[in-house]
Amino acid sequence: MAAGELRMLRLDWVRADPAPHVDSPYPCFRASAASSGEALPAEAVARLLADVEHDVRWVMAEHAPHLVDAAAAERLEREFDPADTKFSPWRPADVLTFPAEVLRRFAADEDPRMRCLAPRDPDLPAEVAARLATDPDAAVRCAVAGHRDLPVEALLALLDDSDRATVERAARSPRLPVEQRERLLRLAGL
Image 1: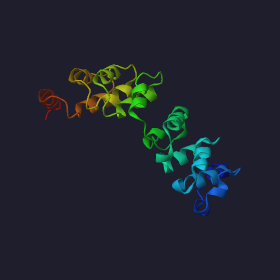
Image 2: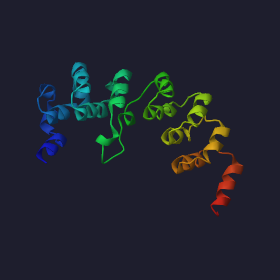
Image 3: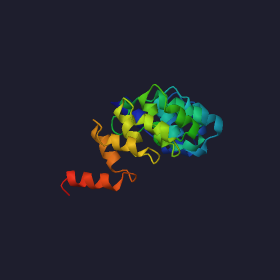
């Protein structure tokens, strides 16, 4: 139990002077240093983003996301294991940004978690959005269901999806034709 407490400990006195603690043998010191964000020089940020402890890497990314380049952001997201965040649905991509070309590349990634990121590109081509709407993974279909450039035909098909969250997201789309909205309201008895 003490080891778990130490892992989560964030020390204000380390945050106040983070540089001497970047290479500490104790992960809680390194994570505390990482939580100081912009107070660290670029080389210290790079070391903490490559730390052996995932908690340290994530704290650094969360506290200075604008200092994380696209390659490091992708590495952090790929190595992320959702089982490591038992108490929240957080993932590195929630604080990190990816250039449009990276997000579009993710649309064809073999990992569905990465394909889920592609619809974060507001200018995702309609044909790519339509392809994601037929993805075998429900989370990917749900992620693209509210995209502004999803073709109406693909959006309508998602109203009959086997995944409830995908159907609900598609039904909330502002691009849903009025007659379909009225049909949904009638089905709901409203």
